[in-house]
Length: 235
Image (cartoon, rainbow, N blue to C red; front, side):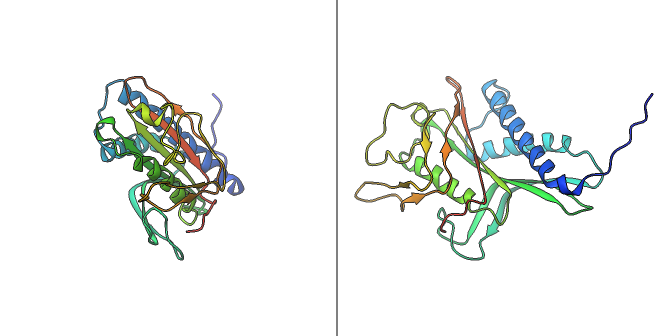
């Protein structure tokens, strides 16, 4: 029987390798959560319970992707962060809390890769329109500004309401805030309320985004969006 020897880790490739692992952890976790919810194995009633269920799955899967004694997988909920200058648009302050924060680090060479996840959960019974749609774009803005804290970001929007996924059209006053299936946001486009009393200030993002939903008929649908945290916007 051939002897297996663990090859020394290539320091120059560590960060890229960890990024690949984190992406796989997140993708598998989202898929597992989606299937478990719509298969009836778990029930989520609000955003907090969705966050906890996702974190539980991420922890279980993340531990499987640690292969060496000098590697560590970490998970935090509501991780507090603070900008050294400027403000986050969402809170209009220099402080924010990342819903789910995960990382893999090599303790020997100190290489690390991390991912910030923001979560939104909209139930038909608790419709808060059109402000929910505005808040999704605020979360994307925050993710674009997490470059000091995370290497990349992901937004998860979950909903049991077709309003967010395939509604024929929105009111012209709030039509800018559109992340329906196959909708697209083009970098630099200004999104704003055209109502007498706007819910919030206009939003412009640096990235271009294509929105794709995993649609569950009569269930909880998911929209997952990858965000480049280095695309810092004007705070």
